[in-house]
Length: 337
Image (cartoon, rainbow, N blue to C red):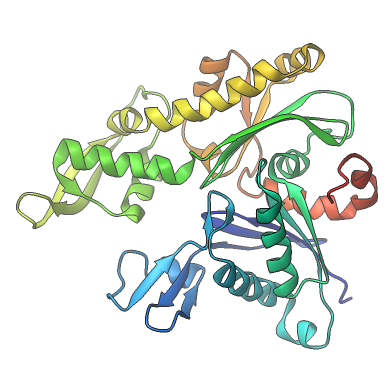
């Protein structure tokens, strides 16, 4: 009853936890509120997100993960312990019933970064920790036939990094990543509105604009949103109206960087697998896959059909959990597990 297998997607923006037999049990922002005087943790997850951009000088809301890797080890460990305790219950951890943990890591992380994630997971209460490459976990979670010798391409647009990979026969054939994703798209919106309207807006407002009216391609029916911020000239609060086509213009640069990574993976793909990908298309996962028309944008940029997976945000966490269930088989093709 107490035996737990947990898959964790430790993202720059969100942490998702999958428990075998129960599915996704937790999805919270990977944010921590710290007291600056003594580095004491004041709030974590959703509670910390409510404080973003609204704290006094004595507190700071920070992301312990940067570009999918650990930026602050101690805070990440505390955050992981909080989420694992929330899922498993304090009594189980007290009585020594520790879960087996599988955590997704970005492609191209260094051995030092891998070790930091592994040690943080064990220190936070895991009996064992296994690291699964993010695109492979995403492909597994999206239900792609990764064990067959056919080419499956997955594009993972997260919060801190975007990754593309071709998966075949329980391994990754070609992969590439760029540290441009959801947060860089938000920054592009902040910069555009500051330059065009002399209006300062926060990170949270930029994310709301992206979610409500953001689109990768111009839309036939323009959407309009009222945006509140601080006028740079007068220094007073001000409201403006922003259209969806303006947002499309604002985010074009980060989207081109993501398309370039997808193209670079396609260029390096062996011919036999490339023909599979043209037939089957590529699957998009991650929070960035929820942006309107992103699938049409990538199809236009690469000439390869593109589809958004069912529940794209949960795919990586589900895949990390499923990797634990198939650990012995996957170890043959991925010894690092």
